[in-house]
Every structure is written in C-alpha cells, then in structure tokens.
Length: 268
Image 1 (cartoon, helix red, strand yellow):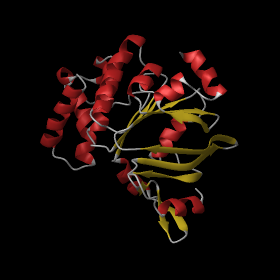
Image 2: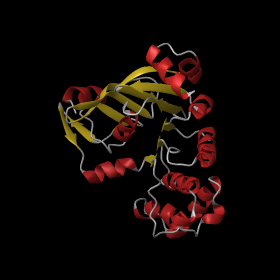
Image 3: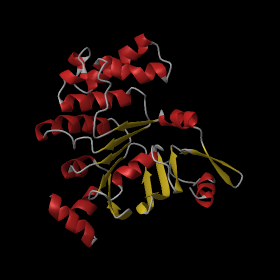
Image 4: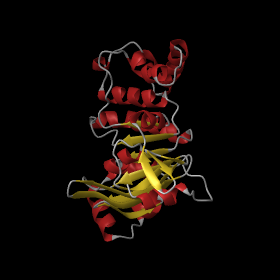
C-alpha cells in the first residue's frame, strides 16, 4: 500500500456520502498484476454490479473491499473509515487482525460456496456471529434469526442441517447469516454460480428484495438480467482495469467500448 495514496485518502473528500470509496487499487500475486489502479464508488442504497470475463479482477476487487486481500497500493474506505490501515502523520500502518475483524462487522459477504457450518443447524449458523462477535444474547439473536429466515423464505428450516438443504436454500441461509451482523454493506461474489439453473431464481429474488429495502450492495455476477433489472451502476472490468461503467441501460444496451460489446455478445 503506498503511503501517498493513503495519506491523500485520509484527508477526506468533501461532498456526497459514499458507503464504498476505493481509489487506485492495485493487487498483484507475484508477477501477475490482477488489479491495475481500480476506482470504485458506491452511494448509500445503491446496487453496483461488477461484470467481466474470468480473471478480470472482479472477485479480487471484492475481497479487497473488506481486506480479505491486502492491497498493494491504493485505499479503501467503507462508510468513511479507512479499511485495514491507520494513517499517522505521513506514515501508514496496517491494522492488527483483531481490529480488521472489528471493521468487517460492517460488511456482509456471501461467497460462491455457502461455507455453512455443517455440524450446526440453520438457526445456529445464523446466530453464531451475533452472539460471539456482537455480544447479543441467544434469545435476542434467535428472535432476529427467525425474522431473517422468514425474510429469505426459510422459516420452516430453522432446525435443519445444511446437508438437508438444496444449494439454493443453503445460499439463502448464508445471506441470512450475513444480514444477522446488521451490515452497512453486502458483498456478493457470484452467489449463484455454484447453483443448478433452476435454483438461481430463488437466490436472486432474495437479493432483489434486499435491494428494494435499500441495502447497499456490490455484486459480482454473470446474471445480466439481474444487473439490468436491479443494478444502479454496472462496472465492466477486463485485464484488471475498469473498461466502462454507467447505468445498466448505458453499459448493457449502449456500450461505448469494443471490449464491452464483445463480452456482452457472448453472454447475452
């Protein structure tokens, strides 16, 4: 992470409030440069959809937003707070793991794979983090879990184990588990890619309802219909850079760049 970039970001940027402000993000793995100076800004209540071919940097960018991946240069702020680092004078210090974990409480993340605890029931999966991290009582956490499971259409599965659920149901539990932490931001990393086609719709329906309820979301997806219908902003990445961004109508229906047009011709 470059000192100059962090110090600049720490001065603050006046004007509109942003839930996500990622500036000049670079990330490499050895000699492979995956992100080459990506900017991303997301306002409260917006749904931003990240599109692009495999290897374009979408998932890496998503993981950088909550410091699951350490950036090599650039800065990430979530709701105004610098993520993963502290600036003191003209120096930048990486936060201890405990403080990074504290920051992550504000960001829910749903992965391609559901990552549920197989030895716990659905309700136990949902209440685990609120009781351990937020210090909620089990009674309070269970009440909230029941509400969330009803919200994702799984009120009748509270005592089931993950192995007893379909992939779509497991992913909806994963969404409920993330929501139980009362996040300011939800990140979705291709949440339907591991599902059978007939199960995709039930997960997208839950995400649509979240968007309708005003949840701020960044979604890595290949579901162009979802991006067109639900997204406020579509960002097309390729080769580690933002090639094009704008409204769904602009990017998906009137793309300005040949690379965007080529990609869409293969997926539409």
